[in-house]
Amino acid sequence: MKKLYIQDLKTKIGEPVELTAWVHRKRTHGSLLFLVLRDSTGIVQVSVKKDQCKEGSFNSACDVTLESVVTVQGTVTEDKRAPTGIEVRVNSFNSESLADTFPLQEDTGLDVLLDLRHLHLRSVRLTQIMKARQHLMDYLREFFKQEGFWEVYPPIFTVAGCEGGSTLFGLDYYGDQVYLSQSAQLYLEVLILSLEKVYAYTPSFRAEKSRTPKHVTEYWHLEQEAAFYDNQDNMEFQENMISYVCQKMAEEQGDLLKELGRNPEDLKKVKPPFYRLTYDETVEKLQEEGIDKEWGDDLGTEDEYVLTKGLDKPLFVWRWPKIAKPFYMKLDPENEEYVLNDDLLAPDGHSELVGGSQRIHDHDELMQRIEEENMDPSAYEWYLDVRKYGSVPHSGFGLGTERLLKWVLDLEHIRDVIPFPRTPRRYYP
Image (tube, rainbow, N blue to C red):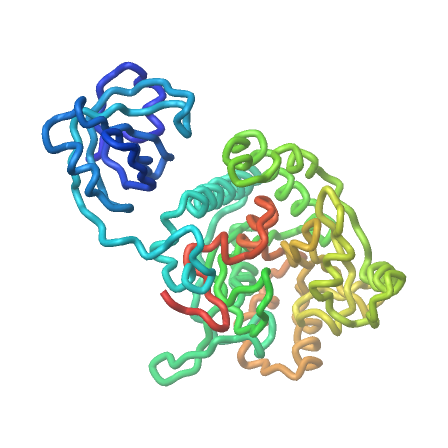
């Protein structure tokens, strides 16, 4: 078992250490060799001087290739010239696993980096992003626990779509047609009748051919459902959740954010209340900006950018027309051409983070909407059945984890926050 990590070295100044890590960089100056070693916790410079190490160690170090695994023994010293301010001066060097010539260089093109994603994931930047992802999910789960929610585990194989059949991935299930889940929502609505407040963190799949910086076909979906929440309760929960994550990231992961080029002070500004526009106000604003937008249209990438450019916190677009949204959303009792819902847009065109709504809890009203949408009621028999036995008003939402992290880190493309991104053109490796 590995006993020493690079992050531990700052507490070992002046002490002898033994460290095993990967060779990240290499440069030679005559009889002095500098290596930058990398492990899961960071990087450190080590120096190998020919006349100050064991016989054979210098030659072994000179022959080592990038991404080889090596073990060094030496003394930790402070050196302001080193990348992290400390250096290990080596007296013994051993190659544990000598790597072939590494195929990735600083000028390697994007397509090759994606083809060789299994190697590119070793980069310091992607490693930092994966750590940021873990912290973000920890804070989300922490928030849900504080709010009294139960994490549940819905199925991935489903018999019906939640967001419409055009984006379903179908597959054969022992002779029957089933689908990969678009959303866990319908199953969470079942579980609130026992646990009341639930959430799930699961993969979702959308067969969309969109090729934009915000779309992938497989992503990790954080979904919430809560009994006795109306749409306003739901929106306030989303505000508090997003704010909580941003504040925790800024307070506890400031150094990591700075390494990734994100100013923690920007995230500290993300506090309730968020900005709000009704759908009608949104269309009017876009038309004033010269954008051709008609009532009932969805929002595109350009629309979202215009609406959110320069904002310091997200924007709710709420109370949409029912013709633009799925069948399960509660109709607005004041005007049934609208539904009680919201889309939460991130600043500066980072796209929709959350889609939420109050759900229809009345059996007959839900059946009417299913029939209006020309859907097959038999596929939703179990979902309708739930409305017959003690149904209650309830609301919920879905959050795209990758989109949230893309915005929190202010990254250009969603593929950067996924270890192995899946798009209409890419499913390898």
